[in-house]
Length: 137
Length: 137
DNA sequence: CTTGGTGCAAATTATTTGCAAATTA
DNA sequence: TAATTTGCAAATAATTTGCACCAAG
Image (cartoon, rainbow over all chains, first blue to last red; front, side, top):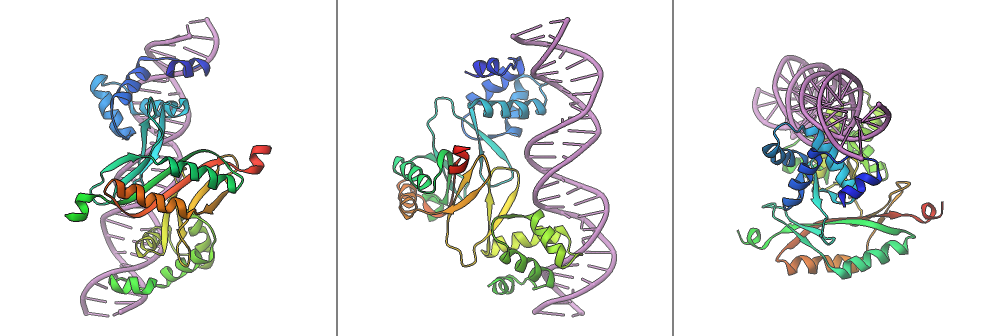
């Protein structure tokens, strides 16, 4: 899948890219470039962070990863491989965050967009609140 | 309203803050610090950008402004004074963006959060797509 | 007159880029 | 072999901070 994308765009499959992709896919959750870089260095200490940044953009372009912005200055990426689309429910106190979907919301989003003449290509929805534990604590 | 907030937090009302607030409220749309700074300079050329950044954070803390992230690296702010909550519908080609709301979506968001034990405090929803003109052109 | 604010310039932070050497197709 | 990629370090871009001076309560 990544290989196809590379081939299609006359890009090359390098060991660095394979390593970064592999670490990225194995890791669960939303990772920022810096975190990914730390992990990657453990396997191949002389991969540079610029390569990680560059590869992350590639993955994003290929559709294997998706940018997510939680509001701190960081650009995070999440894998979309074998993953359904989802939105994010984030606890403002403890930072816990879960992936959620509601098909009824998805349908209404399409409708809402259509009502304004738009055809949707994607969306992001972030729900902020307090989780059960934090509400009690 | 801003004054109350300042007083409550033992902060001071300065001419710079008044000027920045005034420009901010007058301006329509979502403005980044840099843009606001440009406008503010026209009125009082020796206000520094640091003050604009600092004031924008204040406004955000006071509830008069709200951070918005469209996905380019910029932090934008929109006024919430006298404004209803809304979400954003953004054209990926021409950048046009409109404010939208759907009460049914809002209700379902609450429900979805509750189902996971969360109580919502806020949310952001960004719908990306192509507007009518861009779809034709 | 005390506490907080301002402007400036220097410092951070996250990310991008230039370039010579190395590598893939 | 030609074209792309890499790692490094230097360059940007957005935002923050330290500090001496100024001003609001």
